[in-house]
Image (cartoon, rainbow, N blue to C red; front, top):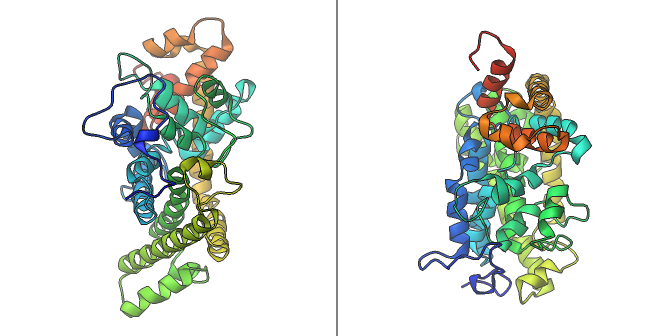
Length: 381
């Protein structure tokens, strides 16, 4: 029952390294399964979303965030008759390239890697799934389909100025960087926004950065909170929070589906490539909901992402990541065996990339322990 503009297995551009088709799974199901079984995916459970992992067991991590994105994306794809498995694979994989400590870690690596092209977590995701994962005898990476790789690199839209690794990779496996991605990829990307805005409101209230009355003025949240309060005058805070957030998600996703249907009707695409060549994305919020989403984002930036308690964690995490990179790059002989061999001798650029890959693949916990091992004489190497 897929729509004409949905991505289909029979028209897939295949994999960089050809493999026989599976008799029981579609190409996108195989991609999803490879992502779930990857080392990088498992590490997401100990990587920061907003709060460093040890702060508490109930706050979102990159893993729980990715699972929530996948649930939202799959539901929207089903409503629009898109391929749910491809959408899910993209949602699950979109953060595989994030380093420890969230955006603090990314900023630190970007600073340290400036002489060699900087650091971008989307480009790192491509490195993870095409090079760094070592699970198969015949190739590096996961050998995902063209459609999955395209959706990952275009997570934020067309790439007129791609990061160095994306540019190098697409020279041998053209991912059509100048066009939009498939509708499935666009759904996964906007589901990312829906998930982190809603769950950051939830985590922010749970952490005590703000309360229900502080968010009551926000569009969408205002109506959702009022509806939740009408259920019970003296509802406990935890239930009120959950009743509010689930309504926020429902409103955002419902608008997303209806607006996308309107855009699809106007475009009347007969193939995925028609969506790729469109002047504008076919997936998105209505103007009113886009403004509401922006208002929520600005509130979270001011009251959560820049809160002094979060700033302290961010500052410490950024400093630790920078120093960890500097220590390893200054003396690549301190890298573990496999990494040390890759770093080579007398080649700063190669050593920098190896150190970057090593640090980016760390969890929050491992990064803190590795820093201690490198700086504390009392710690065993």
